[in-house]
Length: 86
Image 1 (tube, rainbow, N blue to C red):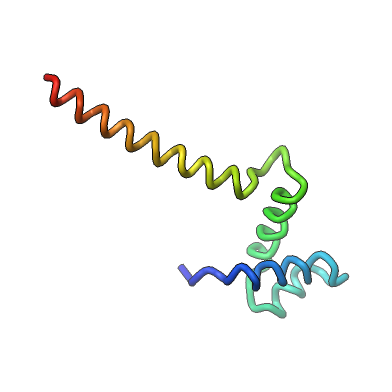
Image 2: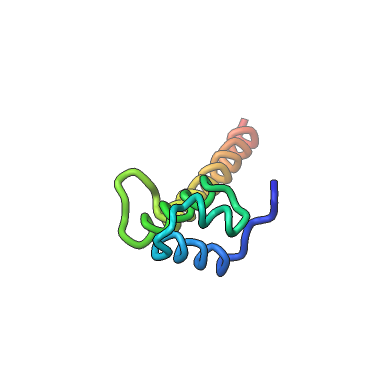
């Protein structure tokens, strides 16, 4: 997997896609990224700024990741306690 692009590059790419008046495919080609990558960035930025019924915001994704990590840790701790009590 290639290294992630810096946040400033993403912000600028999203800005170009929104206000450039050019198709996303042309902007993506100019920036040497895939069209689907740029479309995903724009869709995520829209969800973060305006909310969306079909896409989680970045903050929601981070919270979900943390909750899943905590759930897994608690499951492991619970299993350890069960074995210790047996």
